[in-house]
Image 1 (cartoon, one colour):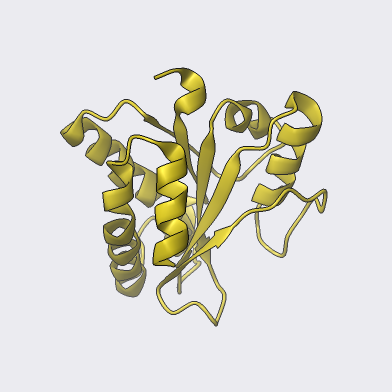
Image 2: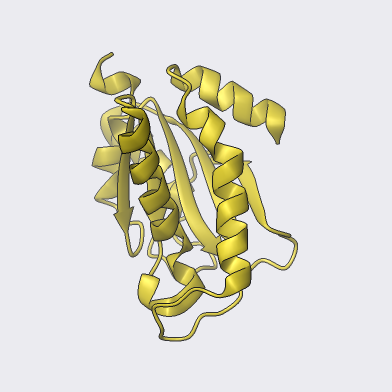
Length: 167
């Protein structure tokens, strides 16, 4: 398997803002799962926000799954949606650029468009504390339980097709 066959799981958010740390917590779970199952086809990254520089990292993956906390009322526990390239720089969130913008940069700068998905995990509390709410922790577990079987898939396109079928 080459680096271009890798699946990137990229969590973002601020763990110092309670439930905004759901993306980072998801990545910690993925990292533990990778070690427990000796997986080599998945790489992770995590940051407080997405930046234009992330296009370099994202461009090296066949598929990327972004993970972030959500304040959306219409999300019960978590949602999964496909990310299309878009030059709309900022979404209505606390993060610098959107996943769509990062994918658009990959296309424009590197000539590649990785298959991309976004997992939004429902959060409830956003104060300056490093402790997630109990409901957010439950949503994190539900999202990770949903995603775990796909981490074992060796082919990125199979992963994406499975996610499409399930959601």
